[in-house]
Image (cartoon, rainbow, N blue to C red; front, side, top):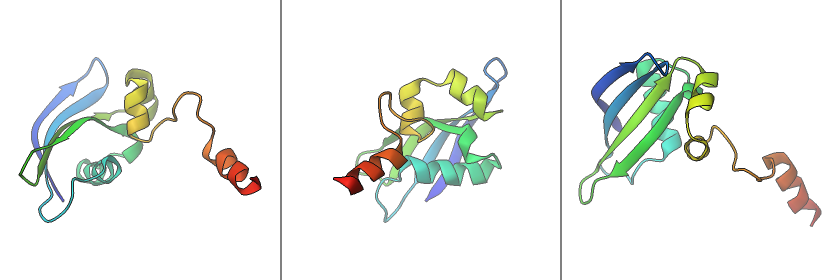
Length: 111
């Protein structure tokens, strides 16, 4: 997987940098958000908990995905600004009403 930044823009009002990216994934399936977040965080030297993939879409018939990624100055800033369902998609929050993972696995063992 190769990530290429096509556009970079600073957004001082929301304390973040906004990136448009192209992800080449020849001979591979479309990459998962978690994989892209980790690789992108390494590429721009930012902790992965401050990187949020806002949008990612695979191109039909071509091993290329395009997306919009935001890198926040702080993780608390990301959680205060980003919509909840986007945080859930990126693994930074749990669904509303969902049980914590520890309790859910313990309940399955008891049953």
